[in-house]
Length: 335
Length: 304
Image (cartoon, rainbow over all chains, first blue to last red; front, side, top):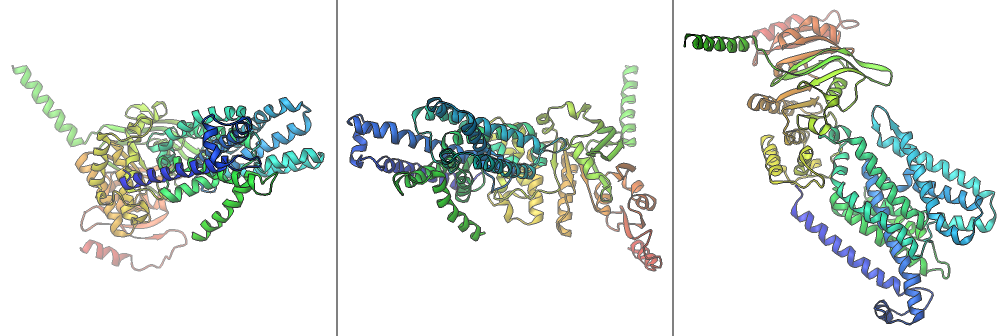
């Protein structure tokens, strides 16, 4: 019962976004501290590059690009689900404690578990993931009510409470640590894409391959859940079960991406928001768009962040916020 | 031959006796039902029976537990103890999706439907019949179109729900309930926030659905006179208990209204529908004892 024009519009927007992503990919591959001209990108991709060119493209730029794209997509989808579940357009993975939970776990682990550098880097995503997951589970149980089930407003309040408490605890941890370690943690928190190697791509990809179709499959249920508990129960939905599954999908997606990228906040909030203004609030229509916007946004932010203020650049998480904040202020003035 | 004829007569008699006594199949009943939030019971030891193909209205003062009862009956909230039996089966042991094919609900507040088209909202009524992705089949479209037609909302099909008036919106929600193809529809104060004409429009639609299609309607109503006019059976509640249950003639009486609302009511008759109605009333404690207009109102009412 959706107007055929709206569906046409969705197709067009998806087409434009795919084009934008491809353009940004090409652009991003050609930019960086090492020399690799645009005209060489296609030949190198086709296997005609020399050792240097191959190394820069396949071992440095391409994995980072893929990670960024996937993480942006996962965060956007996670944000879309959470906004639907909480019936609040200002919800994002941050509210279920993903960022603060992962951040706290990373800080704790980094400061108190002396490990070899080699194994450490591959353990860090696991630690971050565990931290995010535990926090999300705690928030779920604290906001669950025996009589009325999961109350969206309570979920948000408990989530914000947990996030603030964990951030505070993290400050305490950091303040007693030595300087070099603090720098790594603060870059992690700022959302500096740090897991930029193929193993990290492999760590993130399965989550998306499973959870992305699962979320799209459940988009119709999100529409009905958005109508309120009574309506959802009335049409025969097992509300608590569906909520728990959707929440688990959102947590899985966000935790997986945050664990390889660091704390990136704005994408999960902004991508669904932009998608909804473009096409409306039907989940099956806006979620694919939100996913593409999320991927593109983070890719764009990282490409810009990486190339200004050389050599270290600006963390993607900060760049996203720099792009996102003006857009948000614009949105607020519109309403 | 003789014997057969006798039996035939006997059957005819039984049918006429049943119809004279108005024996009806009991669709829904509760046994010692207790419903509460946290530690306070809102519905206490309730025993009610609701007949099939009838319009039943639940009335009572604010906080009497009428909405809570409706929510418990429709499994929106859990109940503490007792039993709710629908169609001979305990609702707790019925699959919620199967239940959604038997009963549909129109809750009191539905402000959440922002940015949705009318057709889309109505299509969600098909959820219990759908699998997975929620693709609509040909049958689904037929039912949706029928529901839009019956409620007179087909012209708004592609329009946003937000753009409709209160009365139109309420009809759309009823269409969604109809798309669920249930024999029973529960409504929680379907006329609240509507102006007089739209209130009547909604109630007439429900009455029509009952009379023409034999659907069972169970609703919480605020307005006594609307309950008296449209309901076949009224359940009057106070403090989570039934004060009186019966047809409008029995329930809309000065003594019942005194008990449930603590008002001194004057009962007359609706000059058009000939149903009992509360013509005027006064608060019993602290009300104006010198109110002189009572008798005048009574005269006007009976003088029609």
